[in-house]
Length: 105
Image (cartoon, rainbow, N blue to C red; front, side, top):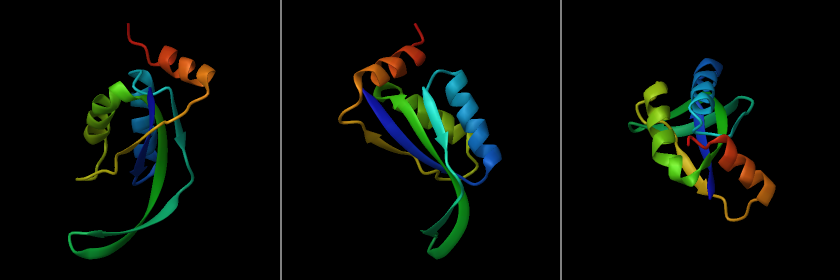
């Protein structure tokens, strides 16, 4: 099966670095780099606000740990946002494409 993994990046450079790595290593079939968003959150007891670049990463469920490790290695945040949402239903030809593109056999 596949997952949609959400990750916010501090800037376009980090977003591009993560995107390229995931695709080159066949850890993702597709990564959507969205326009900048304003994020509001509490960090270390303080209300914070920053501009971030969201990534929508399409990956195989079984690759989550490797995707997580890659993001942590390439991301400057101490605690990057990495949230996986299991795909309950996926158009069969799209799922087949994801499986083919991320196959490392």
